[in-house]
Length: 206
Image (cartoon, rainbow, N blue to C red):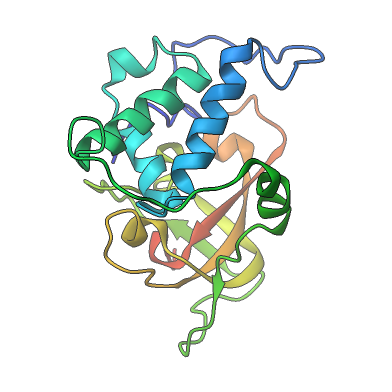
């Protein structure tokens, strides 16, 4: 969906101003917000793609008024509310014990998958990003739709977030890094290159 999180090519928000020596957390409550999100994610009541979709469903006016971890908490509340976990009867859920947090995070979780279908594109191929307007979750940046680039890398097949976010299965798809001339994306005054990881269903031959 065209959510408020997709700011890469949206005008009217001023220049990006990175904070020098930015700390991991700006306030103690942000640590707790992250901890709560990790703890609830470990209950396996939803996927990481579902949690991202919960945040992008926050209405624009509300999303833009929230800080980073406020957005995380709002998304978490929405996920729990949708599953009657706030007002419903108590549930016994898997727990991520404190001593296991670091090992679990260090281990991670593989998202690459095996598929029988060969990739449609090869490194060096010219491709155009399809002008899709999905109603559900997507990892396709709006500012790249309709733009033409070149396949720089092929990452084999990965879980397709657009499907997995809605409980429709992993539906693995080939994933590519596509390289664009920044001027073709952002205008004539941009002289750099831009790279984006894009799934095969987002792409077509130019």
